[in-house]
Figure 1 (cartoon, rainbow, N blue to C red):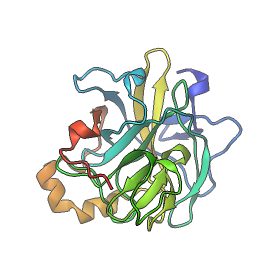
Figure 2 (figure 1 turned 45 degrees about the horizontal axis):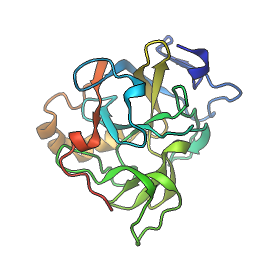
Figure 3 (figure 1 turned 90 degrees about the vertical axis):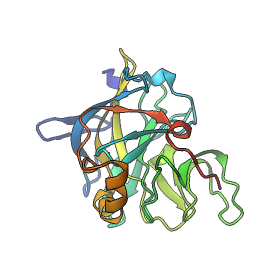
Figure 4 (figure 1 turned 180 degrees about the horizontal axis):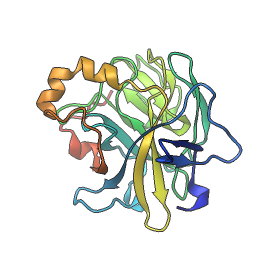
Length: 238
């Protein structure tokens, strides 16, 4: 991997998650969590090329568990390192985007308020290009992740920090590595406030029907990336 594309500094579990961030250190109260590495694939089962991603378009894959969706975004602009806090006041440093333009980011697609998430039938949460147009919740920025269920707004260019609405913390970041030689992407772990235990508790029955007995199984080696409009039949806009 190109040294310039490393974006965080931590070694967990004997070095299974490694990244560097020049000039910054991880927050004292939180650290990245290592999960099995998973290469991102396209819908044909081939390694996904970062250059094939369309800018400001919603992509979805599942990680670190078979039932937990993630947004993958090429923001079309650099995403900068940002200091953040979880709802229980643990500080952490989100390392910013990866890739040639530092524009590639990934976040858990589970809303930090009511745990709304995209399914194959319906999605109330997604990235919105430009400013939000809902008159009940004026946008405090543009190019945000917006949840129509509670009108929480997150800025993906700054670690999915909360800009508006009742969410109490940023979306959990999914750490990805970009291999400059092959132009491929690999998910390596998470950073920030995980809500997976609450998610599985709330949707246990629903997830058993959607995913089956492997809902809590960790994703290993590979995970498929799809455009949200291809993954979900009805992405709700608000």
